[in-house]
Image (cartoon, rainbow, N blue to C red; front, side, top):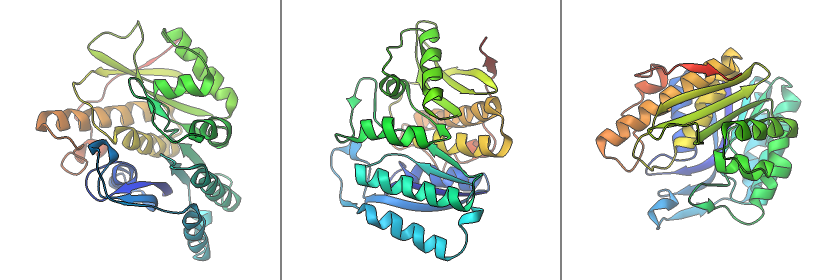
Length: 283
């Protein structure tokens, strides 16, 4: 399996491609990473160094890959944080190039917009671009609950409301949806839910809630979910494996007291999760 992953990158720590690339490689995937930025560390530290790359670089690098004659062997494109509208357009251009060469290729979009408690944290225009351009072009989307609410324009205070929003998101185009960090009145205080939906049904994975706030987990789970779903075409299995792996990764990060997720030290979680949590089909 070959995946073109177009995301930000950091030299220290694990967010963007620095979080998504290695887990896919551990699963035996050949990853072609294109970096939209190169920073010293993620911006959560409050200070960083580096450079945001021009959107034209994406098209140029994709052209170089196309010149190798390998685009027909690209099975999927994965995108995450988009720093600008121009970067987003370049990513969609790359998706179009790949799908023209291989119509069976998937586009997985992690629609990074914001989060509960933080609100919208991307640049003006990006939320609208995600809603109006990126999500409708995607086969797979992996929003958190805040992003699902923004994309569908619906408030969600119950599981039923979340499922209605998922149905509305399907109607926008994506055939497979993973919603992370789902907390509703039906979720126990010590737990966290993940929901996944496709034509195969809607499923829930419930894991223990851990006392941590680290960057990069969303990038990792989007990558893992894409790989498992693309390989098995089984939404429940993809949910179980990706969710269990990321819970194991976070648990070991918390136990180590690390501010950065232990992508390398806990790498066995990607191939053999410490605990496989049961998946429940929602009626």
